[in-house]
Length: 291
Image (cartoon, rainbow, N blue to C red; front, side, top):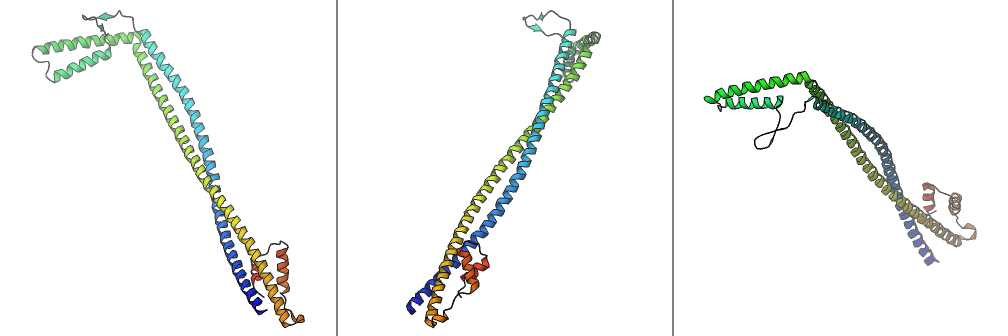
């Protein structure tokens, strides 16, 4: 009887040690579960906020794209105005027969601009000393001829309304340039909004993957905590059964009417545990204590 008692006592200590170990491991997994839950919830909140930002950026991009379409229509109108101004200028110019030089090459007609460029070139050459001596007389004669020809061309342009046409073309060209720049600015803004939307969308996917990873870790830790808790409960049941046997043996040694029994509170807790009720940590700890 003493040998059996010693064996049971050793078994009781071993089971008690295992119960303590399962409880500690379970508590560790429960702590990890809390940490993973917090991390997952924080990441999910970030994902929701990023999704709102992506939506706002998409709306901004769509607005910029609509502005691009509007600015393109304005630019098309400006382009048409430039074409019409050029056609108006061509319509005021008289048709001249094409002239050719001695080598058969077409001679370009003189214009105010071309005559001005020629005079400026001759002036630079004169300043550089290229028209000295006898050539100086030729230089002044040539400059006089060019000046007279340019003056007549200017008068012809004024009489024919060509100058007015050039002014209309200048205004149309300026409007065209402004419209083109507006299209470019709107397109750049739309592209920037699109790029930022893509960047935030990628961040949404990265944060969502992290949240899902934390959720998987949470499920794993909860599963491990439940497993350790089940093993802890089994250990408590084994411990309680061993304690009952040891009490019975002590009672047999003391006499039939003096058998020691577990306290009523301990018996009630064990009954609740066996029936599947949930016990608090303090109640489970009380069950593990040996009466």
